[in-house]
Structure formats: structure tokens, C-alpha cells
Length: 95
Image (tube, rainbow, N blue to C red):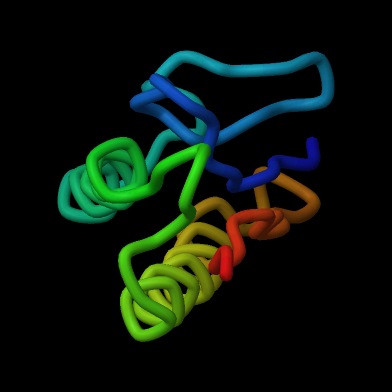
């Protein structure tokens, strides 16, 4: 199975399967990683504005770096049970 890590407004579990959102027990992740994924989504929901983007380029870059870290950690945690996980980072800093 392929998973995608991607934020979406008001979504607290930003992991998606081939047919859409999955519940927060899928994929099965270690407790600390599960907590980090939920914190990453919460940070997006609290810090990203659909009108203005992130408050600064630095905040946007930090959020992207955390997404890349989570992507690698999830890939390690679910291997070999899943084929892959991909970060889809669509949030960009608005001018």
C-alpha cells in the first residue's frame, strides 16, 4: 500500500491511503511517531492561513523540514508492510 503524508484543513491525521483519508490507527506507528504526526497536523491547522499562508518563510521551512523527517520515520516504521510513503507538501509561503 502507498501512503501519502499531506496536510489538509481541519484534518488531524494527515495520512492518506489510495482512496482518501485513513483513521489514525493506519498505518500502525510507534506511539511517539504517532504523536509527532498529529502535532505536525495541529501545527498546520493552527499556523497556516488559507489567505496568507505561514507567518514567515522560516516557519514554512521548519514545517516542511518536519514533514520530511516524518516521511522518513514513517517509511522506516511501516517497512516492509507498506510499499511507500510520500510527503506531498503543498503549503507555500504567500507574498
